[in-house]
Length: 442
Image 1 (cartoon, rainbow, N blue to C red):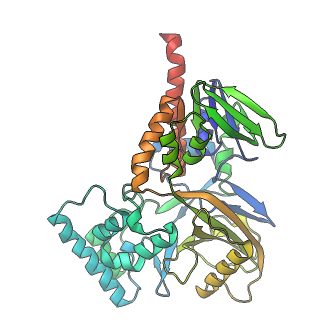
Image 2 (image 1 turned 135 degrees about the horizontal axis):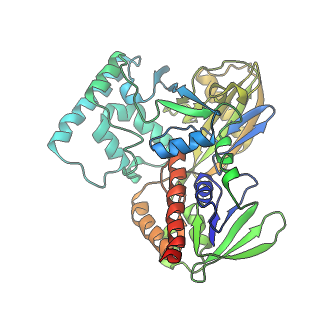
Image 3 (image 1 turned 90 degrees about the vertical axis):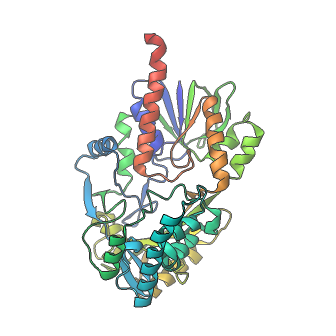
């Protein structure tokens, strides 16, 4: 028996690709999807912050397009950065045109300096994120976007973060791209998601729900209490009934955050338990608002690097799909990061979000809010720091040795996309299937 814990995209994909094999999928919440969910309130649909589909793997793209046949729409990315009271296109490093001339000069000269530095010495393997920014983009781009934005998002000094996760998210541009961006010349899209797919109706929840017809066994409202890895037994509790059940497994697939999993493994080595407890992450307040005025923005989302604004990003769901709101209205999601042990009231967060958006010219003082709701995403972005670099390989290897496969963004403790979560589930299911059928054919 294969036990799967967590019906986010990684867990759903694992179950889907194990079809016909003996497995059970348990999900703590009443709905599937993990953070890839949507909810409705007062005629509006909100995702748990922005979830957009863009693909690098042909087979995962084909799978999703088959599961969501006729339900996806393609969008040309309309994402911008608001700084120096100016909107410039994302990504910042190739779109500085329109900023004050002295800012453009600093960014351009700083980037040129990185090209001569790169030729003179090889960068150290354990560069901090701050060092990566300065080495690859220069001190001008660091000063005017990369440093303030990332310090606002991560809530720690960038010296504390490593750079081994950055390359696919923040590509280093060529000099031609930077010069063209300073002059306002656009001859190609830049970045990993210049276009994206999004469901035409009902929000991103249709993606996880599309796996359900192909899943043989799923139980919602059940949480993992503990795991005896030596005896290969997992104890679960039904949250509604309060009853517990014990399951024996040959393999256990976990998609819950690594610290949560290790805490539940009663016989796990103590030094690795302590290592898991020291893993760090940042949480996000997802402030969802609806405004009784149409067309407050024509953008998909906007980044805010400056400290004058409490949020690091603001997005506009009805620009992904008009079906996500009501006629004559607009909807907004606001992302404010916070440390996991910090707590603020809904009223305070809504006031901060509204005040910041009025300051940015998105909202007017007389705008009526007809929805004001907050979701606290406790696990949002994991820290890639020096402790993670040592702890995660050791923890995951020991879990594997005990028949526990930890996958997904929080199960591998990494920065990955929805596509990656689906791909990891598929790959693991194929591996487990091969293990189960091998003895019978030998």
